Length: 193
Length: 107
Image 1 (cartoon, each protein chain N blue to C red):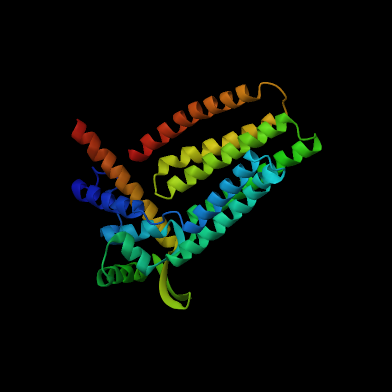
Image 2: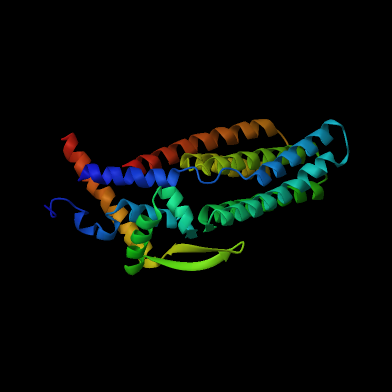
């Protein structure tokens, strides 16, 4: 009986884990355009380059969510809870992003605010990478999403302090890794039984 | 026997078919999923999946709905609250049952 139960669970596991939704081309194109145009503009020393990177991020995130939703409807998935989670993550990204930009503008755009924004962008990319990987149902990539979110929180904190910026990033990353390892290890052990 | 194996009495007969259990687990990840998508992910046939979904519908575990997406008619399914609760209880019972049998094997 136990054998049958395990067989059934394996079947369910493989059904849920079946690669269902590779990244739609429209999403890949959005992010490629954002990176190619923005980074090339910065390298060429164009003044609008950094602004394109900053303003483009929330736009690209919104497009990402819209394209993903459209793609899922085509495939017969309506109101995916994973997409709702992604949408909320994107909203949090944008709010965090706007807070940092706002802070840097109020207290003049100095190197410190700039580093915060860089850390925020790194956090967004890490989280986004986690979400993309999780689309392939490797649920342990959840920790990457949280790493990105915590990285972004760190970026906002960095906007308030003026010294040891990169050291702060190093500490945030180390603490995040250590805490996530302990939290997720115990959870996955319980889940696997 | 049922007394010695905790969780056994909580196993739901409707979920003892892997296709029905798989369909409900998949439906728990979204508000609605089309028949075609379920068939693809569960690697089933029209006839078999249709029959199993009907049983779930009769049990009040899922709801079906016909709608048009890009002018094409499709059938979508959603998990009801009753279905979700039953599935959770069934999975909990399975977990309990498996942990007991794993422990007894180790002994």
